[in-house]
Length: 192
Image (cartoon, rainbow, N blue to C red; front, side, top):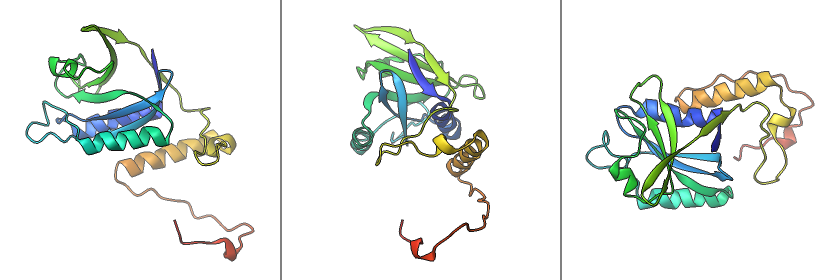
């Protein structure tokens, strides 16, 4: 069984919807069958993006660096079947991946995500459990210490998720203007 948070699941589903009718996909990383990283990749197929999802060598290099940076194991590649069922095609099986993750858009507005395990040429369905993001602690990858979710309330986390969704959708989120509290101008920096 694989575990994925609602947030990561929604990234995959939004990508599949936004790219429809073309195939879309990316890389999944994690630990112990828990998906902890989703890296969407644009479809690089030159001729038929509605029937094939293709990756470049640069995409594989980017995924490798992403997985190493976040100390994640490679779990597999996900991709969509815009007009088909989420079952591995002969082309999918030809890539000799242990796990195949497929988004089926047969019903475009109710997509399905399936995981498949391939052993000795046979295909077995794996369960996927989607868990809530509420209560998930975000760890700063530089310090190893808990970040926002430890001190933020549910309303703040919900607003943060909405703002991230707006950015993904290409919108500019509205930031509330706050009055300064014990602000020292000497701590201000324009460097990012």
